[in-house]
Amino acid sequence: MFTDQPVTPARLETLIDLARHMGERRMTRETLARLVQPPSLPDVTASSEQGPLTVSAAVSLGLLVEDEGRELRLAVPPRDRRGAREILVDALDERVLGDDKVEPYLAKFYAYLIACGEEARSGDAPGRSWEARYAADVTGDEPVSNRFNHTKYGKMRRWLRYMGLGWHDARDVFQPNPYERVRRRLPLVFGLAPGERPPRRPIRLDAASFMKGLAEACPELDGGWIYASATRRVPREERTCTRALSHALVDLHLDGVIRLDCPADSLGWSLAHAEPPRDATHLRSERFDAVEWPGPGAAEDRDAA
Image (cartoon, rainbow, N blue to C red; front, side, top):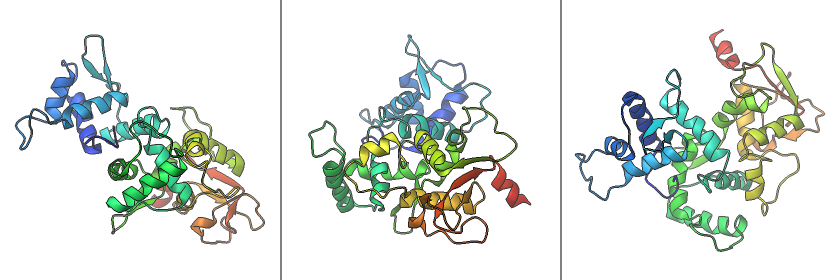
């Protein structure tokens, strides 16, 4: 739905807000599709698909639930205070980055991209190059239906940025850096159950436990099952974080979201691809022995002080 169809983050956010506004009123696929894509808009014809496809995407993501009478309801409690963007990103975390059933290529391509240590340029030629490389390295040139291609690649790039997996530079080149994705998943990485309040004291994990927790919470990142399935033919360095993850962890440390413990004599996981700046307290080498999480809000508290 993300790599073949004209479904955009803005349309899905609009649909969430519309469904909330309608409250208990009757909602069908046709009603919501017309609201998302009113027939009165310029260039809208009977064959225009943006509205129906957006509704179908919302159902696939579990944002809308369809009952036996084919009426839809928003799968969000009435008192839920999250905004449309947060609701959508949470669904993408679980259904797209945490699994490959709804969208079989996005998380797997991202895993392959960061394992290669490269960037994702715009344009037809880069798209065709990635199409050929993906076929050779990930699918093994085996015939598959609805295969990954340059068209999917082009539409995928905006979703990678929206999900907090990187950013686009001034040349419209996507630079992988899962800063926001890792930040959102830190409670799970550090062993908290969904919705569980963190303790008032920092939580500390050794490097091996942290990487294991990260792989479980973010399977598209280093060591996760999606990452493993996409990188079987890509050379890997033992106990070395990908460039994308290295930059994300160093950036999170510098922002006070986590604390990396990198002693001078460490034999832990390497962040060499990010060339972390040295200091006299925490970043004394390029390898980390442990990661400490002060808890949500720690960085904001530091900035306020």
